[in-house]
Image 1: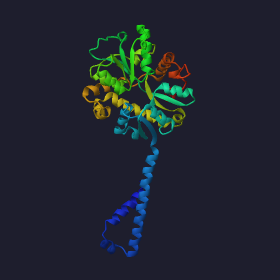
Image 2: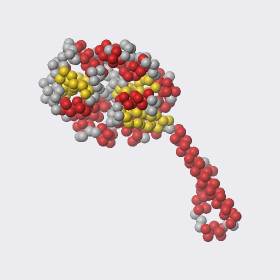
Image 3: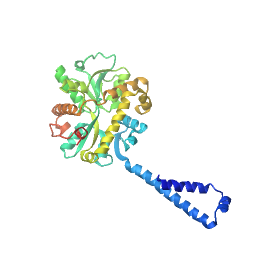
Image 4: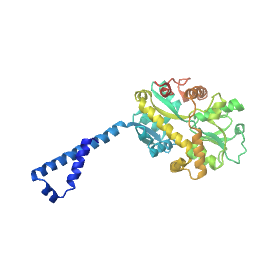
Length: 364
């Protein structure tokens, strides 16, 4: 507030502190009327100054609209951002929109209803091959694992021959395709041909596994974490399969997706956005107390489940140089293209250039 506005406000308060009797004794009527008019003017000036300041603050906050899968694990990160005011501290206004499905998030992005969503690099590569300019920044390398009940006689991956496996995500799920390649290379058998598969929604398959109606299950990582807390054992996860097939390390299964041109035009905003998400990840990586605050959002029914969810989330926080992850992702893309074919990746046998956004690293 300017000194002028502050002075007028003080005049107004001083004048209003006097009773009508006191004012009639101190000032003539025509002066009193002048003071009243000044008081009104001061109020208007003060209101204008305050509105201008509020408007300037709102205008200074750069808006980023993020489409989130309702009940997805990405919402945990944005809960931390909101509770700690990390976006405001960075001069951002992050607006989140909860959506019912992965398809709904991609539709919202393409319709311009949101600026950023979370999806996988396969979708981005296919979009770029079709002329779109979406791009990808890693969010998490947490992936599903093949899991069996604690009392199961299945001890290694080769023991899955002739068994019944529940698989979330359908026949073209990346994790399932990688595990097919892993089975062929490491154990010499065709996983699709020598097992019985049951495909379905993650919650349904989780219940099927609990009831013992399948011998093993490959589910999304957070569903697997819940089973792990109940005593299920992990045989191998998709990242381990990828490493066996030639990758140097874990690659991010999902990441932030947005239009490349929009991001380049708003580079300072996106730099602040990703610095903010990194701060949230750091809090989640180091503070156990933060997970107690996050418990309602995770839906963890007990401490054991919360701890496994916490640890598996932390395992997936990307910590590799982007160029190393990019090289491994290109390798895995070629493997998936070979196994899944055009139905999975479209006509492109190589991952489309620009699938990963490198502007933060290149400084361009």
